[in-house]
Amino acid sequence: MGVNSFSKEERVSFEKVLEGFEDALAIAGQAAVLREPGAMLERAGDVIWRPEPYIVSSYDGLDQSGNFAGQTQLSVPASLNYEKSVPWIMDAKELRDAAQEGRLGEAARQRLASDINLAALQVVSNQGTLFVKRSAAAVGFDDVAAVDGILNEQGVSQMNRNLFLSTGDYNNMASDLSKASRSLIGDISPRALREASVGRLSGIETFKLDYAIRKTAAAGGGSLTTDTQTASANYWVPKATETAATGQRANVDNRYQTITLSSTTNVVAGDAFTIAGVFAVHHITKQSTGVLKTFRVISVPSSTTLVISPPIISNQGGSIAEAQYQNCTIAAADESATAAIVFLNTVTAAINPFFVGDALEIMPGRYQFPTDAGMAVMRASTSQGIELVMSKQADINTGKTKFRLDCLFGVNLLQPEMAGLMMFSQS
Image (tube, rainbow, N blue to C red; front, side, top):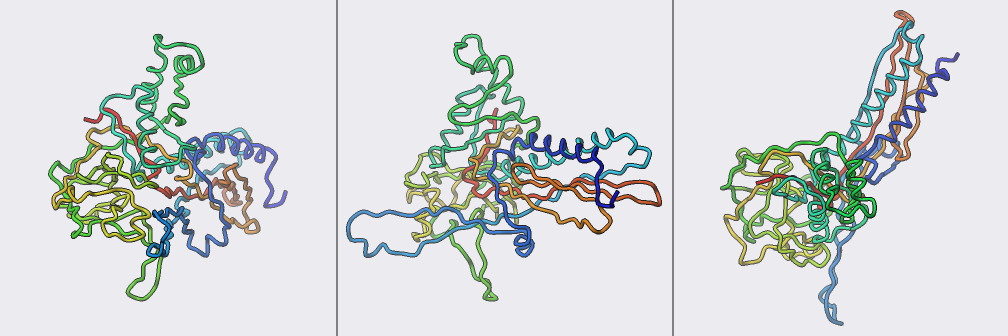
């Protein structure tokens, strides 16, 4: 047998591992996929910039002499930011039972599938900016309709909407849908009763999580403020690039902004909040929804500054770029030097993330393990292009063989305003 050969038992085992791996990609399976050549990614440092769709303005009248202007194209970085591996070792006696190797391969598959799902869950849960606050426990249609409502109001695509619920919240919804008082015509009530299945509601596909991230109650206090006056320039002007003092020009990530608060004491990453007088707008029409815009804390760099998402694009600067990408409005009457910050995550509870498919992107990577350096290497890809690499290497001195199962991938939330979270039982 050549040094790079696998026995038939190992090949069958690997095929089964791949099949199970693909079945287990529940959250990642709903995301978009970006495939890029490995050589190009290596040269780019495993980071590429993804262009966002243009949003343009329209004007009334025949004479448009004063309205011709350049357009600003925004882009966001996407990276291969996860390297996951499961290594194990077997000696010459243990290898007599090929079934043991298969079981270890299955366990490795489960671990890597869990890692990919958890990465997707964490990215959406920590970076999604649309916050749906529910004051009571989950009850069913009304909760899902609230997610539908916030997406519709801001002009988010109605295609491929997905909501992931913790087991407890999902089962509460199924309980409501299964009540005997409901008609059993059709399949909603029977499925809810017999399988605890919620399915598709209000145009949104729902999924049950066997684990969910919990968010602690915000502890920033009720007296924090920020200055929303135009003169304070506490707003964001979208830009495609910026030039450093050295003259080097680089792309700008317009998903984030640093703002100044009266204090950031006890504020932590992941907190959600609104700002008094800052209302969300429909991203195309720019009409105010009459609902306060929700923001997320990304990091806390100092005692008075926060990095937030999305940025406050209120068009207070009056530039073409602001008019195009405006996401909120602050009327002159609402401008305040002490606009109140109100936190939304008021009770520790599970995060139930949601997103529109294209907002979350999986980037499959590829390891180039050498096949002529004393290792046996085997590789295969899931339908999403996520590649598994199985390799082994024997030690003649000890009679032991090392195995490893690896995958390289990225999870990137390209548009935080097309993703968010719902939390229940919030006071």
